[in-house]
Amino acid sequence: MVIRALTLSLIFLICSSIDLVAKERDLKMAIVLVGVGEIDQEVVKVLKGDLNKIFGKQVWVGKGMPEPHYAFNKKREQYLSTVILNALMNEKEYKASEKILGIVDHDLYVPELNFVFGEASQRVAVISLTRLRQEFYNLPQDQSLFHKRALTEAVHELGHTYGLGHCGDPRCVMFFSNRLTDTDRKGSEFCTKCKSKLR
Ligand SMILES: [Zn+2]
Ligand SMILES: [Zn+2]
Image 1: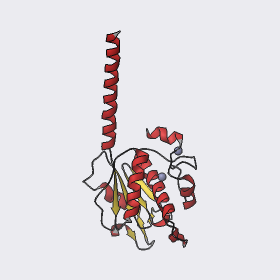
Image 2: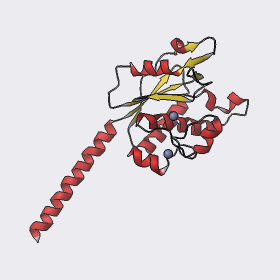
Image 3: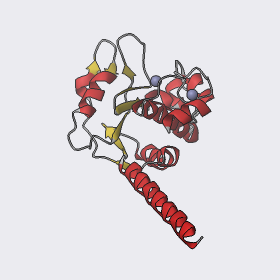
Image 4: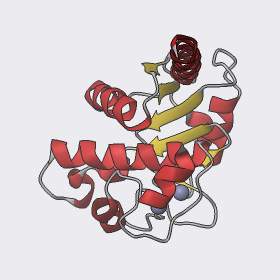
């Protein structure tokens, strides 16, 4: 009986240490926020705290990058998001296990769309803050709505870097946002299906 109890507690001990190692490894697989050009530091601070809670990963703020003049399209007066993604991908200072979220305050586009709120490829993502402000639509400023939208877009693009595709549930953060009303309706939470895929 004593031996059985000892064996059981030994198994428990091994399991909990395996769990601890997994948790530690998880924490090391951090999310890095990188401002590309001049960025509102308040929103970066909010994102840092909220993304840590949502993904359970360490979130840190990386060294900012210069204004992305190289991505500017004079004709469209917008910035090509794919080119900014590539610039982030080529940054050598981040580890392969880290997810990189670039934050830009310029209007982004890809050739086949009028604009994009963000884009992701492999472990790198980028979001634009420009269309998330009420002022962009000539409406009075609303900081808490702006922060909520930034979080929704950040979680969506990071969701892609964790291998999630678009979700058909209009209330899930992984639903594709065609317009701002989609972003506002869905909010920053994953549906049960996406949440389980994330784990
Ligand atoms: Zn998407
Ligand atoms: Zn979903």
